[in-house]
Length: 118
Image 1 (cartoon, rainbow, N blue to C red):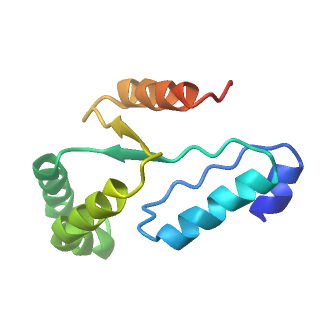
Image 2: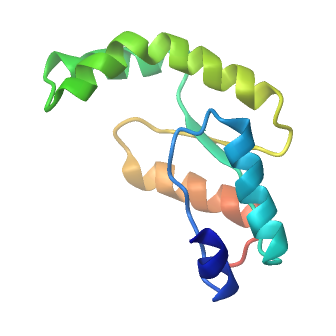
């Protein structure tokens, strides 16, 4: 599906926690085959802020996933940091808690710095 979308000249955004390097490489290969930009971004908080944020969300969960995520966040955070340490092309984007607009602007700046013109 990504191949067809890129071949038609459209952008593709995969907004996920991708701790699977093989899938990231598949995405990069698809972008390369379509002569498209591949920009790997990681939005993040410090470990302590991320753990606190998930703890706050799990205190008033809207579903069971929020509770489960809070108990796993430390391990997930560490796994992502380990993955990112080996990915030299990843651009880190700081999440500004409680300021979606500032975080969005930081995201756009990171994409633009990667050479993508919007």
